[in-house]
Image (cartoon, rainbow, N blue to C red; front, side, top):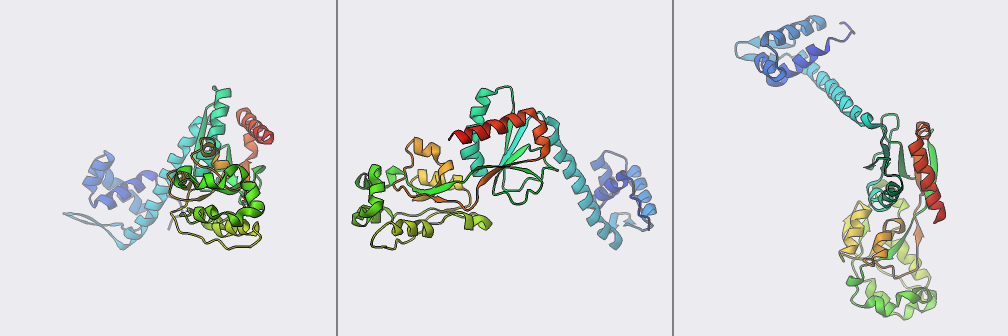
Length: 323
């Protein structure tokens, strides 16, 4: 059998005829005549030296060879159509494109991008949020904000920051417990007097919001670890219990749940700045645990050839250095 591929038109005609089970209906679908479809199928069968259809007065039916070949043709045409759709992202390469994890894009990156846009209104920026690692060979992204740096061999990697988590809660959920705790003097409590405060015990009976990062869970401090560090600050070494509560796979959803008074949260410091400033969440304890990986800005060499992208990178790194 020939290894040379048949004309694309014959494959499109074969796909349409197989899916519509009729040359006439395939012709209507492709806006050609039935005779044209018949001719394309004959050309394809001649090229393959195999019959692909059983013909009858009521229509056509695939042969066993036709059924098998259809699977490959559909898969191949699907890839071609996907590839063509994929190319649309390269029509606006003058736009600065930054990819990031959804919660990081929403809660950390967006405020910075908006600040940059204020200073550079002539530069258009596009933010793409997703969990998939960026293949810069197949993507129009200029850079991505990544948790950790694995999977990006040969790329430039700029460490941005290592985040921490601390317990936060809506002040409306606590029924005055925070006033009893005296947030301003929490550090003093943690240095010895915490064991005398029943308010702490009452606070920690509230539901605890949980975040599931899947494969990265081991890099995100969980309630058992945070409560253990809290207990270590006491002379009596009490054990605090973990309580159930809603679970989310996005940090941004967990933060919103905490704002909506659904429980205590171990919130990432970089993602809860707006809530802390607006006092919709408060941090009763001066106890912060670092994440197991840092956040990195990843980009290929071609990004440095883009003056707009390079200017943004320099500004972002400078901005973080100032903090």
